[in-house]
Image (tube, rainbow, N blue to C red):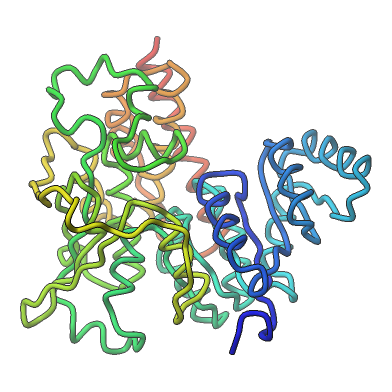
Length: 400
């Protein structure tokens, strides 16, 4: 059946002005007969969201910052646009669970994206998950919401999408097939830099990723390898594996996006150019394939593919993934909150690059999550807020 004759899929993009959000819109633009933009959201980038609204004419636009929502509402009114502007975090939940929405692209960075992800899961949506923190913070609670709501959870992170593409659609067969997963990592901008010099790293240096174009927070996470640590935690829940079944290998070329080692020691890998539009297109069209806009790999022009051990001395934060997965429930949520504070403090010039890890470790050491903290959204939010307070106190001590 052609795209034009099929009902158009209504898409809600949470975090539409970020790198994943704009890449999603680029993919949608290639298939106008297949997709319809129902809602867009941003926190404070009202000018960017205005331009998107004028181009895509969504039913709703959400701005979590009220002042910027007022500004956007006024600008759309002056332009004669019919888009209705909603404001506040609760509005994200409203559009994510809207009965007319088919698919939700969850591209809000950080723990702030968890409530709207839960709303989409509980409403049984096709949930395209680019917000890894929903699983890092929510864990079993979030996966229970996916199952109870009957949602279709599709990973958008390139590594998890790669693994998903290597596995059969019948998830019940996965435990019998998988020996372990190999998440690939580029190694970031400091793969060859002397660890003793990392104290002098600037925010611009940390954000200069050699292969991917990403936001500043995720770029810093890639430089510390905390992004990969969060992906290990995410993979544990997405694929229902034990922590020891998830491993990391450095692959500087970012051509192989991840691998699945099967019980018979066969290895399945997904390859492609480092372009987020590939996993985005796959999540939008699954189980079909549509044009993504990414360029094809030219094997004749490709340099050798190389692999290296992920060094815990250079990347001490990576080890925290397995430590927290084996720790008390809620430890991964504490790690995520501490890291968000540490990265924000580094980008603001308050602490050094090498002190981000110290913030994470000292926050984990200072807290023991209560047993019931991870049984509700309110409990998770309270745990997240407590961890942020502790992390801020650590930052204040370091910068005193």
